[in-house]
Image (cartoon, rainbow, N blue to C red):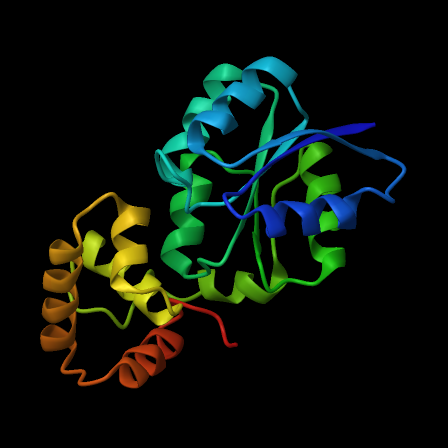
Length: 208
């Protein structure tokens, strides 16, 4: 039996994942949470085989919490389940210690497959995202784009508002506005539509 914990700040997403996994006879849902601290607490208290983890969480990013999960429960494996599908996000999560990575647009079967394979000790990246890793990391981005600007660019392209991005990245709305202005100037973009097309062309987001 594979013990699972689900950590996502959207109740509907948690319900959807729970509903998807509940019929699987070899998978048991042990608990769920909606913050970074919940992820660490669930790992410590339940010692699950796998934690399904979003990257955009209240309290801290999923990238930061992955090593903390490993400290709290060394045997627990992390499968990232997120809307962030750029090569940079995938590499960053895997480097932090995630054993699997699945986009929220993946098929139901992909999430089940990822859970089982990671529980067996394998690593798994959703095949629809794996091609992103073949290209150089964010190859289309000029060196003048900082890591924080890259994060803001990706979230803008995914459709999040400046206020939502500020909450996700724990920065002020004014700082998001500043990053957005710098991004548009450096990339010579003039609208959100151009920004989305740029992000798609450079693997920062997957096709919708």
